[in-house]
Image (cartoon, rainbow, N blue to C red; front, side, top):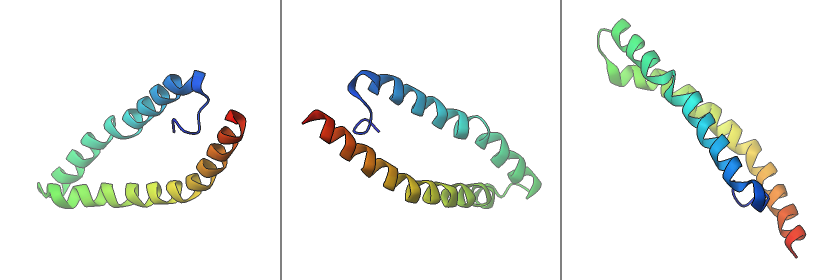
Length: 82
C-alpha cells in the first residue's frame, strides 16, 4: 500500500486501511462466531470455520484483482519519481 501511495498521503492511506480492517473484521466477527458457536452447542472451531472460510474466499478474490491494480499503481509511481 505504501509503495503505490504518493508520499504526502502515505500516513493517511495507512490509517484509513487500518481503520477499515478493524471495522470490517474486529467489530462483527467475535459476536458472529460466538452466536454460531452457541447455536452449535459450543463448537467454537466449527463456528470459526463457518465464518473464516467465506472471508478467506472473499480475501482471495480481492487479492487476485487487487494485485493487478497494485502493480499498475506501483509502476506509475515509479515513473513519476524518475
